[in-house]
Amino acid sequence: MSKEAIERVSIIISKGSLEGVYPGLIMANGARMEGIEANLFFTFFGMDAINKSHYENIKVAAVGNPGLHIPTLLGCIPGMSALITSQMNKTMAKLDIPPIPEFLEMIADSGAGIYACQATVEMFKLKKENFISQLSGIITVGEFYQMAAGGQIVFT
Amino acid sequence: MGLKEYAGKQIEIDDDGFVVNVSDWNEEIAKAIAAENSLTNLNAQHWQVINFMRKKFTEDGDTPSVRALGKLSGVSIKELYELFPKGPAKLAAKIAGVPKPRGCI
Image (cartoon, rainbow over all chains, first blue to last red; front, side, top):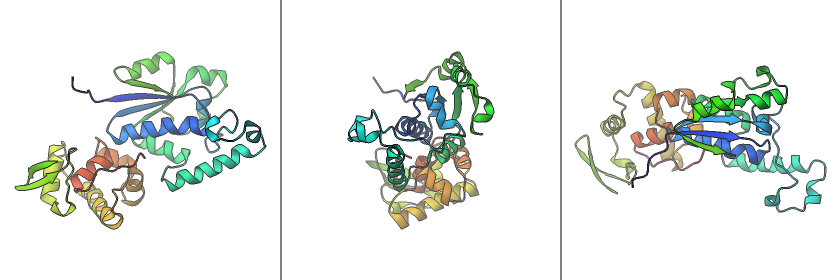
């Protein structure tokens, strides 16, 4: 059986930490680079990534993150999350990975859609004005499935 | 790996269809590769990107990413996707006769 090429991906970003946000952004941008249609959906705390008040301040989770290889108690020290985030941002900048605001702009310019989840918008009492200008719309889960039809769905 | 005829010349290409030897390339070959990828009319902006790609590859030994193209080629990311709808960096590299970009961004 020949492998069928992926033509469309719908990527859901549900977590608001740096390590929760970047993979989805990289996958969406990577899809567009390959000529694959891509849409990004932000839900729950993932929505911070497109919230104007927060998207410049997305941090690495310093607690409950065994991958960091530091004792949990150290992770609790005030400023630890900011310190780890700043180190990580430096490493990523060296690798030519853009900061989240620039990355979102790139992804929007590539023609990918950027959507916010309506249920979360209501839950957090947000308005369209709270989001970045690249937001394509606030949609329901039903509209999401319609948009994702015929393609792959990736939940992060 | 294999040989393929572009603009009357036998060119060595890799498995993904990228020209192996950068020096084999000329503008006629670029037009032939573009036509094969549904780009029959290369305009001034296409050439701006193609020439930038070759220049950058010659300087750095590396194919520029979409981000680098958007920042340095004088053509914005939005325009890049309009010019090369099936993936700007990849397609522009193919037409420019430089290796496939390897970056994730």
